Image (cartoon, rainbow, N blue to C red; front, side):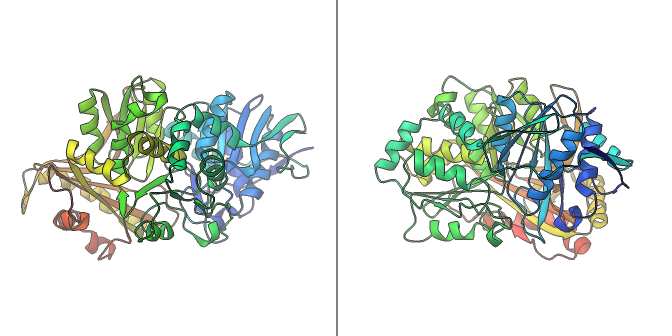
Length: 539
């Protein structure tokens, strides 16, 4: 039986770069999920007769939210839902399932790399039929609907069994419960040389993959241990947990401490990697060696011919504005186009759909290709294993050969978290006015050549987007400032620093960027405005 329930709007359902992201304490409020989903369905013109894909990273409250979504979808005339078994599905796997089934849209219940648990974060990403994140125009329309909603429709029915693979029905709506790992494995086998990687493991090669108690644990067990033959126990923290076992599922040097400590120990395996909560981010390490995300994108692009799916050529490459310029040098050498876009994977989708790019990536540990419309953590790990299998080199040797060929971009990101949003917005507004006036100013060898807002003009749809601020210096250095759209506690100011070196490859990044950091914080008046004398996180 379909019920129409009267409700009152919430004013805080504005979507960020990848969806709505809130504290669990916010979303458990009466009708919060119901309001958002009904607003979404209304904003896109209804879902009658459509097919959607649903899954999530298993974090706290996902199970309850998925049941709500199922019942609202049925009440709104949805034709079919394709749902991951137990409600689990990684973000890249969901994009694949959506594209493979020609679905009309998808919902991934994840707050990505944010903490989980009762006091943690909750999120919902909305993907369009392209397999990627919705546009800003659509998210704005959803927000507008959420502020005026007065009722929602929902089936008055028992919860659906998400454990058993197969077909079910709720009212007139079909529900197909699938094992999403099957389709994902098939896709990876069509991209990479699995036989070469199997031989690598048979030779005694060792690895450690940290799934961080998140959704890619079962994928990693199936692919790395069961199919490719990595030694049993190579995959750690492989059971998805609602609170990620207390871990912060962000694959970086700070939060993936267990893996980092292992890789920098005297008994480190040959290769280390980690994924985040929903499986779209990756971190790559060799023995006592870390591959920065910016270098990672450039390295994958430089070695594309080693991968069967790409050996005949790539269309081009794109990076977020905050990502280092390393991949730009590779693109120039390969004679392919290189695009610079705002932060947010949705900005890559038009470029992929129009066959302008094959690879893309962000500095925040994300890389992917046009095989789907999301970044893909396991894809990046398999890419590296394929490179190592074909070349016979170590991770460090691959990176050092790259630096010799292209030079090294010393690069760091400084996060100032939990800033009052009014303070953060005022800081950025004043900085945007200030930066153009600094042209020609010399900060002890760092002479500003250009400074101002970064504005992206989409070559496909003609839209323009302002996203962050950039200061360029005559010696090739850069400072990028932007506010993150992924936090749930105030605002996060991110400051990105880059210095290019042609021959000095063994310096400590913090030392190389020490003076530029002082310049960056001085220009933005970070301490005076935020009260923070140092960054909360440096990656």
